[in-house]
Amino acid sequence: MPAISVRLIRSALLCLVAGAGLGALLLAAPQSGTHGWWRAHAELMLLGWTGQLALGVAYWILPKHATGHARGAESLARGIHPLLNAGLLLGVSAWGLGLPGWVLAASRLLESAAIGSFVLVAWPRVKPFGIGRQGR
Amino acid sequence: MPLLSRCFIRSGFLCLLLGLGLALASPLFAPAWSAALWPVQLHLLTVGWLTQLIFGVAWWLFPRGTGRAIAGRSAAGWASFGMLVTGLGLRAGFEPMRWQGHGSPMVSGLLTLSAGLQFVAAVAFAWAIWPRIRER
Image (cartoon, rainbow over all chains, first blue to last red; front, side, top):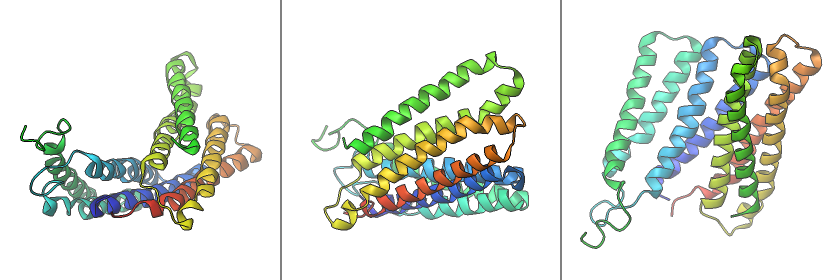
């Protein structure tokens, strides 16, 4: 498993634990949670856990290139994890603590940059098995 | 496929059927019941189906180690399965009652137990799978 996938999958598990913990607090004491904390829980579980896990597994398991960098532009791929997690941290803080709208906008920008980088890296790797390996 | 993976995945299928069944049937309920069942339906699909499917497939496909430290963590995997299913079952059974205004101390207590079980299940699974997420 490549280092980038290791970082993404481990962070996804941490988001699962954080999101489940927040969800447990909201289920046990629903009156204690504002609407923002419910959104923060959803962001951790949907983008932090399932979304980030999908990116990590896809980066690991999609067909590799026969020449050059086996898993695509590595410099671009290295940015996915820090961008996504910085965006998640800002987004969760913005929802939970009711921070100004520009913080949420900045988080969306960082998350979009992470997803955009992933699509650029992964797009050429979505191909039939063996293509590029035997000159086809 | 290991037995634990089969249990997670089959239990995930049952949650999918139950979640979709509730979605299909909800127009037949009174609006108040329909609203009360919405959080259960959502969590049957996201935790019961999606997360259990991910847990099952990850337990099956992630690189296996041979060390004692890794082998010894399968008990945590089983504990995670038991707690997740029990926690989700309690939630499905009692959360609609609270949304309907029947928030007796017993219902609140069972929902707190459900919240704790689901959180500890997430922690246990993360702990069990963590050493298998590594660079090769």
